Amino acid sequence: MVDRTKLPPLPSIRAFEAAARLESFARAAHELGTTAASVSYHVRQLEKQTGLHLFVRHPHKVALTAAGAAIAREATAAFAALHASFVRAHDQDEARLSLTALPTLGTSWLTPRLGLFRARHPDVAIELELSAEPQALGDGRFDAAIRHGLGDWRGLRSVQLFPVLFMPLCAPALREAAGGLENPGKPLDVPLLGRPDWWNLWHRALGVTAGPLPERFGTSLAAEHLDIAAAIAGHGIAIGSPILFRDEIAAGRLVPAHDLVAGDGRAFWFVYPVARLQSAKIACFRDWLCETAAAEVAAARDLIDRAVILEP
Image 1: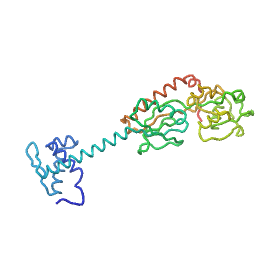
Image 2: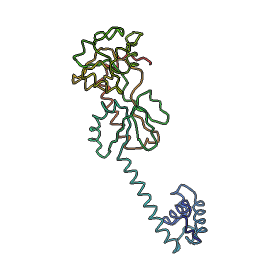
Image 3: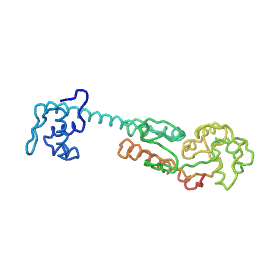
Image 4: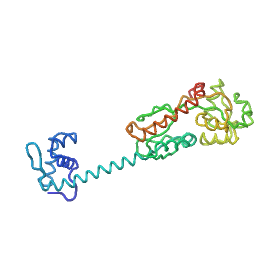
């Protein structure tokens, strides 16, 4: 008898539907990636559970009974609707790319260029969230990320974009006041802005063991792009990326306060789960991003070649 409170097992229904549609246990087994004996077993289990004869067995084919034909119509329609729902969900997912990126890179470099991606791929909408901390990938919230590091994140495919470099940057009016940067103990007329560890590493690249004294620093801001905004406003000398802020340097809003470029061996990377290697939206964004980053590397080739790379 049919249990009116629950559905028969889905594997049995799936085997029945395929056999009914293809009129063969063997062809159903081929479609389902199993054996004809397995299909026959599931169909017999379904007949036993429902108390209905679903097929008339012939030597080389099977034919539906009246009861089997009635169920087959509904089962085929149900599986078709279920398949269509997966296709729709896939298409909707492929039309939206959710990214997480570092605040400075996302604000100063990526966001001004995203319109170029949309012009090339108008069928893919971008959702960008900025976070200083790495966000988990693979749980459905984010499809991919731009991170900085050495590129060795387990379970993720990493594609290098460009190196993390830094140098002193300031407004043109403060260039002369930055003349004493080489000596970390010498008083300056303007404060320093940015990460003390980068300043220490930059001085090490100069061959100076000691970093700048704490009293040399001005306002402490939460992100590199904020330090650069303060430097453009003339509030100090920032330590920042000449690649991320190449447009500001080219426009004359920033100038190098010293010619030395330093780095800590890290780079910016586009990363995404290995399980998403076949995603078309990730592939098209990756290709566009790598092309855009390659143009930045070419424009910054002199800076990259002469950078002094030290471990933190």
